[in-house]
Length: 425
Image 1 (cartoon, rainbow, N blue to C red):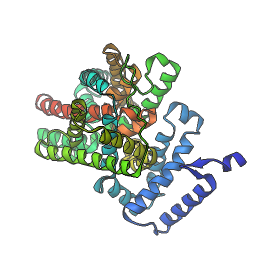
Image 2 (tube, one colour):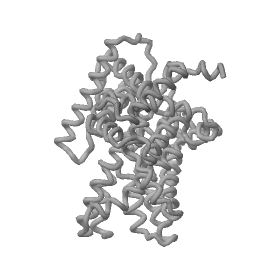
Image 3 (cartoon, rainbow, N blue to C red):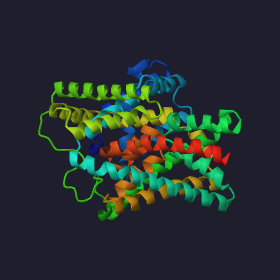
């Protein structure tokens, strides 16, 4: 008992943390929770810290299913599904995550810090091999699910167009929504009817990708030769992030914050001019180009790296709770739980991970890291899915590659889908 009382969550002793949690829950129940950013972030951080500790201490969950990350997502989604979180709290968190832009804020910090803190030669050597691996793995998965779909009676075309393509389109906003418009125009029907068929595939694919990431991480522990423990490239002595002895300061964090926001602003501006490519993808290209050319001063690179570490340390669990509350519809998942549908989603997730692992091995990547980034991250729900998958695998440093898989490959899928609608519909 004494050992439990000495436990700390986010640096706060357990009794005090439980008191904070109880007061927050009571404020939610009686509708006295502050609105806006303050109330949303409070709920996300408090429950995120608690769920993370619970998940990291549950025997089966911590070993095979991704630990705290998966509990943060699905425990919070279950609370919403059960009606235990008031609707106004859900709406407030949804607004904070999406309208206010906390998700963009988080991703901007991690992309900028991860790439600018990355070893330059690793960035150059890995990037030119990564996209071909991801594209080949996705192509293999599309053909596999089409064949299985025709065998089980679902249909080759339906399996490809309504299961595989929505799963690989880059999430809901960047993938499912524009895809539904394309399909509706080609079929001469209402987009709402099309999107209702796509949402379960996207959601279930996201769930299986998160669980798969935890299982791949466990496989890496059993077979150490398959994993670089967070490193993508074989035979490269440097880690994903450069070590630096620079001391942390408040000024450093401020510079890192400005650097991250500035690069996101540049990506957004170019995204307005060339809307066919997502702003995240432009941001990745700009940051990677700046790193490769040595444009960004070392002081700014180190500041961005330290800011991303601060954000990841303090807000990852909070963000995962926000994802569970605002973006995971357990009702849609439950409604789609037929054996045939689950099989098709599993074929896509399993074959893309296997294809990426094998393909990654052939070009000099570690199979586990390649399977997670070039594989599983192509079947999740965009940026939120990337974070959830990498958190479940314990490999958040691979976010830049995960975003390449999600955003650039997602854009390629939309182009392919637009062509297929003309041929198959």
